[in-house]
Length: 386
Image (tube, rainbow, N blue to C red):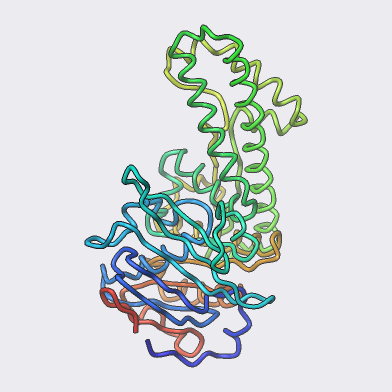
């Protein structure tokens, strides 16, 4: 690729991916890409592979990336069925190399692997010591009017960017709930095992709910500090609603655990009939209100919901930097497509003010007018970046 001139402002943004190397990832058979710190704009026709690039970066944090894709989907069609992602990341302590990819197990399914400075790791957890990532994609545009499960998943991603252990707790809760459901399906005959499983559900469930509540509270404080009714990105008012969450609002965690465990025991019959556990953090909902209008976000116009979501993600990026001490990478897919010129200009100013490495994709280069001297522009064509 041709390297763009890097303004002094962009050189201040750390951490930053300085080099991204892909092998058999999505549409890229092989790619070795030098990147500038600061704001980067990826342009090209639809289907050229812009989103694939930022998806690769999103896989440097816990979880399944911004598309939530299965491992097999990330491997290039026609390739060996595996993929590799390597990133040289410039930090205040020097340059490190992070790598992730897949290997094929004996039974034929892919398994994910991780490396730090070429040394194998048991999990991705140590990556969080060097980088944090936040993102916004077009698939999230219907977040406020969609099902509660999508908002819980969105909130868990917000928590995970601050607390790298949160994903493990959420997964452990899901496993414990599945175990309880199976025991109830069998008639709950093994009462001792059922008691132990409900104790596990209550303990992990309260920890998950508490982490979500704490993040919502911190985020609300950041939003309050920058609250401006005239902003093109309206402030949001957030409430986490659920049975366990309501308990934690008025009781210590240990007492909430005891009450939740009693509720699970009392509702065994009802849950057995329903085929699932009806009470717990897995049923909570993140309620969002359009602050200036004091209206439910779900009842706002499509444009208002988009602006509200952008404001929420920007506030989260500031929160991540404040709590972790690490400026997060910000990945914004097709972000300018449905914004008017004034909102686009306001967004770009806010992104520059974050002093993070920011990746934006878009089909139309003209939508990024005003960034020519302040960003690195990369043109993406199938399998290539120039």
